[in-house]
Image: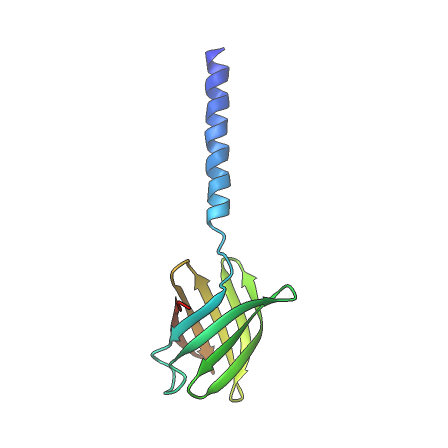
Length: 124
């Protein structure tokens, strides 16, 4: 009888660990206003804000910097990252973001050049 109880307890511990790993590994979608820094981007594009919103079941964003405002029409979750493709001044930008609660890091690729980007939440 003791062996059976020990086996049940071990199975419960293993199943709790597996369930905990799968839920904690899931990145929540970004939301709200964030400031961004992309030090390798051209002047005027290197600093700005990004506002993430859920609209009709889609994650979208608006990017603002000293060169204008740019809309990201859809951001998709791929594995644990969020990705988007959008155009800035006729150039395709492919963005990949890795959200954490207090910071988002990622990469923006333009014409084969990868530029790191860091986002921090704005307090309203």
